[in-house]
Image (cartoon, rainbow, N blue to C red; front, side, top):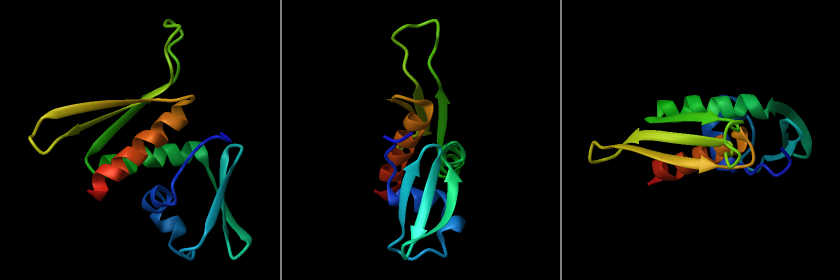
Length: 121
């Protein structure tokens, strides 16, 4: 998970309760399967990356976006892990958007970053 890219904005949106006591200048790093949070130079807590990806799905659903992810399909050699975002747009049309990445967690977080950008508009 060392190449996983997560924005502070997504972390604050998804882990609202967990980060509420941290200052606005808190830091985090991805260390193996955990996100390590530090504030004022001291590690405050860790959060499992896999649990974070699951929480991203719950957060997206609460904002009107359904995220469904899957790992590699062994029946298809060109298959990559993906996360599909489904939602109803402003014209009341069903829309689907796919995000492919190196892992199911990466794809889920990329999709969640996209949801955050749509939500911010």
